[in-house]
Length: 154
Image 1 (cartoon, rainbow, N blue to C red):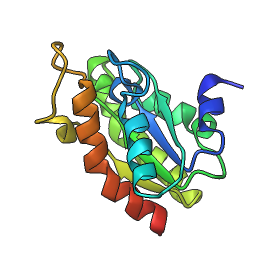
Image 2: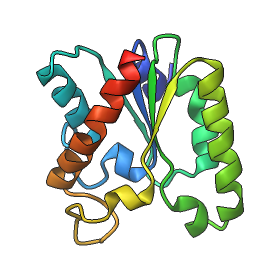
Image 3: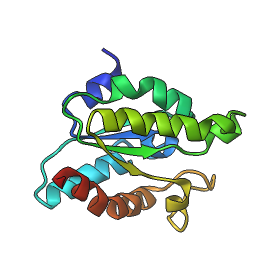
Image 4: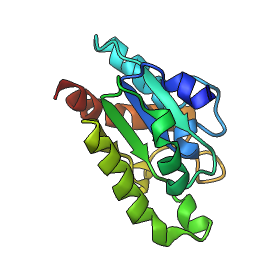
């Protein structure tokens, strides 16, 4: 079993994305999926949030990993497509891949919460200007919290 599949085992919320999902440049537990899980628990919502982020991943990679990242217990998919498609010369595939991911989620009755790049603006970034700091990831998790809670209620 892959590490991603093991992490997603029985996770009610799965965060699928690239480096800003993985939490590049910060310690484990400081990434937004871990902070989101802690915030959910603090609100009395005891679900697990699996981090299925891979540094440098494209939406094509996310699509190919979808089946190993989510299982029958997944209720909400937090999708962070990032900007690697454009950087890797496959930007023309981004929209189709996102549509395919959201369609697969819909077939499994999984609600999708999108994290587009615009949501990262105004958050605290590392010196590279691309990746968030622990505080930036906390701010992102806080912004996602009501949307994820709403997705879990439906």
